[in-house]
Length: 374
Image (cartoon, rainbow, N blue to C red; front, top):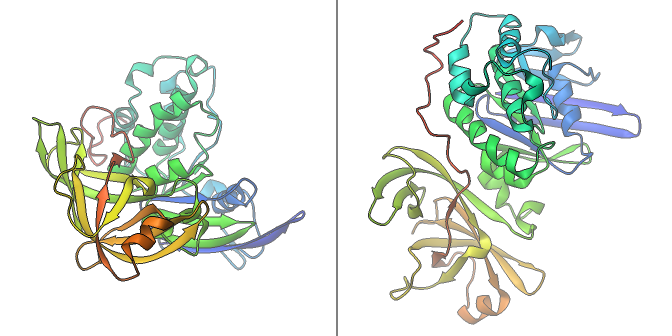
């Protein structure tokens, strides 16, 4: 577990946060600009000492009472908004600088980082000749080669244009799939968070509004995320079959099987689906004459009225209503006409199902345990 608690006053800003999140996977610190996300990240790194701070990372106490481990003794990799590479050095030299900072025997080697981040073609290029997305990939690689116990990423995509973001996101997903290093990821972009995060810490005005699995928080009626103009559910699943003739894959998710377009990989491949609430309609029976491929049993957990006479309906997949969380955005007229109510079993018709990610870059994911280069 990563257990953090920080309290203090910074000028006119009051910070009072506390959370406990899993010690692996990606935890996103999410909220509007100025809510304290970067301040928390700097406190975790030891760059800022708050008198009311406590921090324990997977059993290692970095701050508690009078104990304060200085930044250079914390096994942390830090990736900033702007890649802070040495412009006069080559990509290889920048990466090797990360290796020299390692405080333990390598757990992930140069070959692994190069393969995971797709930077072999950049190896001999000066850092000043890289694009924004390429610089960030090298900065992430350098941070990983320092052999961190925790990787901190402070809005690493905020300075990039849309094309550069689309270029680097698949590599972040690949790191997520291949490495067990926990990541604290600061963002105010809900699309990034939906695509990458396992756990969400929702912040507002220097406080933690909620913390927990992202799928649960996206569907929590007490939180603002469900009231976004385009709310969506994210569901993790596993490929169980493919149909090359029609370019489709069957993905097993909690509570059912979803047909997804595209070649997602062989059986056993894990993927994340994003299902917008506006692409889910409800009925009492499985449609017999329709182009919709996905019609799954679900149970209504509740519903909230939104603006424009619409309802945001909270569902759980499966006949028993214990599967994955799902959202549907329907008109109030349709809700009343069908006489829908909490606890009722319905059929959720998914008009569109998309991957929350575009999938990893082509090529096998290396095993970091099999280091091959110093």
